[in-house]
Image (cartoon, rainbow over all chains, first blue to last red; front, side, top):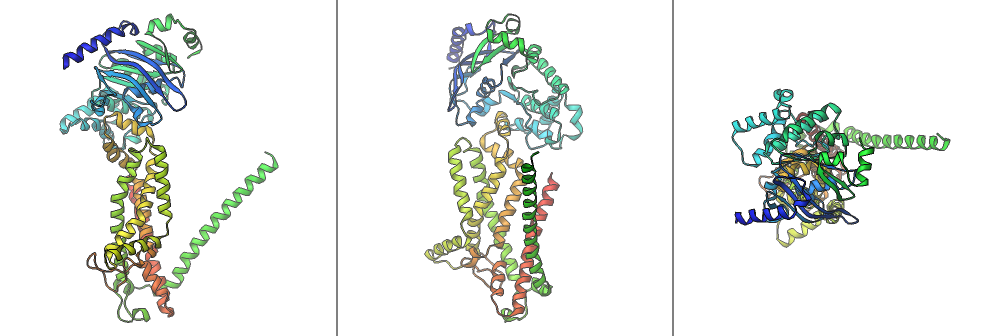
Length: 273
Length: 279
């Protein structure tokens, strides 16, 4: 069974190789993904392979479908009845739309950081421990260690170590965002999905998050949605440029920024900031 | 600003202030009239004793039977309604979130139930009791009041749960929660203060309602000992005494009204304090 999966994985990797710019093993691949709402087609025939241990930036103007694409990846689109999704998204060779796989386990392979932080209605400690408890970790000592480890990982430990039991909703918005990142990391995902994670933050907090991401890419695969060109330039290893629900260009950061091929991307790079 | 807009602004400000004043005045007047008429009849005796012989003709004793009865009834009915309402409110906000049209239908239906006069609940329950040959009892009263306040509790909880941002729901799922975990670990906690308010709103309606218990709970001079005993309630104690031609008995009705108002006030204030303490 496993060998069959492995061989189909290789096969699909080969047939779609042209879409992927010099990628090693893709950790997540999207094939022929279409998303329709009642009135419009939000995503058109998306094919994408996301390389491991790198930051792939989804770049494009507002309303081009970046967030929808990101939400498809951990099937948050399930929440919206008006969205009709077809196509395939595979993570480690498992189709996330298949009924066979447990969606909660698949989602734990992906940590999500959203535009605004939504701390869970519990303590700072509880926020980090929540995902671990869902995974069945009950041992207090392990929980304590992990909470400290992941809070340190996002440079929040020193700020909150004396008030771990207080409500997470009392933290500043920048701290909340780092907490949300930490709680995503705590379940040991392979991929971090970040949807304009700095859009609600002040410049200093934004910088902390950005630095975090550059460090985290050694251990995780990061998919970052942004419309801020400078942020993309600072962070991206690969760039997917989207426009009106389609992928217009996909390549390494160097290629995209130094040698854009389409007019629309040239325009975006010229006026963007 | 043009004169028209200035006048408009002024007109609506005065109008709102005026209406607010009227409402406050009406409320104050109601409170004053029950206190004015009932305070002189208020005594330790009335709170601490069951009615003695000839109570309704001006004899001695008190309305402990009705106070205890109302408490049993409203508390049990609220607990019962809570056990029904919480799962329903969470269900429609978590599982049915995809089916917006169905949701609108369900909410409309619940609002209609909310609007049905309580006498209809009472009559309906009474008709059922006739079919099953049951006598009026505390148990029947509890079930009727629970049915009466459930739609109120569900909709009040629903309104609270509706305000939870979709982002929190997404965050919960993204962490790997199931729907049930999202409902009871995330939504429940996030909405806790509002849910408490919903329970108290329903409790207040339950303890103050006379029509639903008129046929179903009966009336007795004794504190009920089990669910099949009939029970007195404060609203009915007020109703029966107010119907008396004897002024002394009428004044005792107002004293009972003060007690009822005081109970409801205490419940809402303590709930608020609890809520603030939690926060």
